[in-house]
Length: 113
Image (tube, rainbow, N blue to C red; front, side):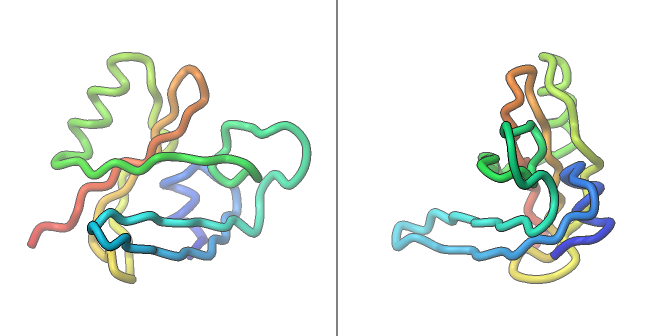
């Protein structure tokens, strides 16, 4: 995964990502991402592609309302909500938001069924 889609969602310049999605026996899903480009050394920046960077992903019913809600309390969207083009989450809308403390959260609205 990478290119313009991932740049628009994460704000990472020229991103390229390997993804592994692991489902625990209780149904919880953990998504692991390895960025192959971006900041490589030094202090961890607030960029989603930096080594050591981590984020929590939350499923939301309305991604636009969720973004408006977090922006009202000082968070900022890193990009525009966009649909995932392929894979097991095809059609889900995703966007990254970052707080004043530089914590990043991914918001994901599952595709309509």
